[in-house]
Length: 91
Image 1 (cartoon, helix red, strand yellow):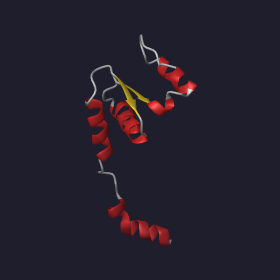
Image 2 (cartoon, helix red, strand yellow; image 1 turned 180 degrees about the vertical axis):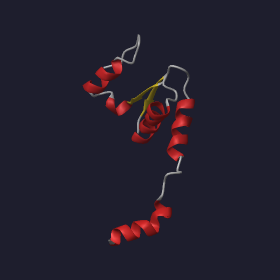
Image 3 (cartoon, one colour; image 1 turned 135 degrees about the horizontal axis):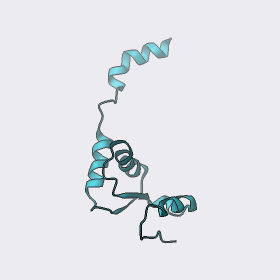
């Protein structure tokens, strides 16, 4: 009861449905690289912002986004190798 009352009372302050900071950040990141680029990221924010735009908005799907922290994981390298036409992930 109390939690529902508090949430209803604070809804306007907590509502993030119009917050587009991550959308714009991801767009700026993807717009900064040339066509068909391999874009190496280092943080969850950069990786997820770019991937969100690619998957949900079909934006700049020509860019391969790879988190450098995951390049040491065999499962990640194997999955990304399918996306690197004519390229290879260094070991």
